[in-house]
Length: 235
Image (tube, rainbow, N blue to C red; front, side):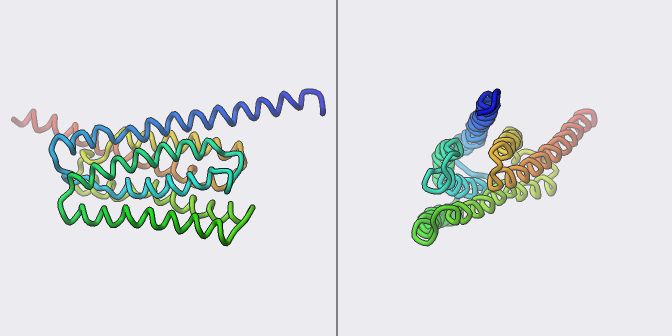
């Protein structure tokens, strides 16, 4: 071993682990960020104009990324598995609450989508174990995780459309957007350190989309406050 080489490797491993842990902690904040929204839903016993679609996307994404992070698919990225196992639990809780308080038509739609997520996930596990092995299995699940991550990061774009139409950020939770942005940056760095294409590419895209959400939030929340001040002056 070359002098100093072991220290370089130890420092690299430490940095990789530290960035991964930071991503896990930020992800925990992300998973808790919808709590105020669901407190409102429970308090009002109505889902109002909130959409359950982002939570369905998030559940599917967490399940696929959890599978990608397990040793049967990708050894050495266990922090991906840990964060997504916790994420899957939280998303399932949120979806259950949403179904409980949603109108009948929306409740049925969400229930069908939830069942579809589990059927699809079990199908992915079966296909990846039965038809692929080694690197080809990692590639198969990896490309699926990239697609699901991009879909999850893009799902708030539906809410952005509502914000633009109503010129109000009422239904766009700020902390959800902020947490998405921060966790994307963390796992982008984690993926870059691991040189894992399937981690850094979707999280790089998530960083850009998260920044876009924050910019739109800042613009319309400022316009909303300005409108409120003008209304007070007019009265």
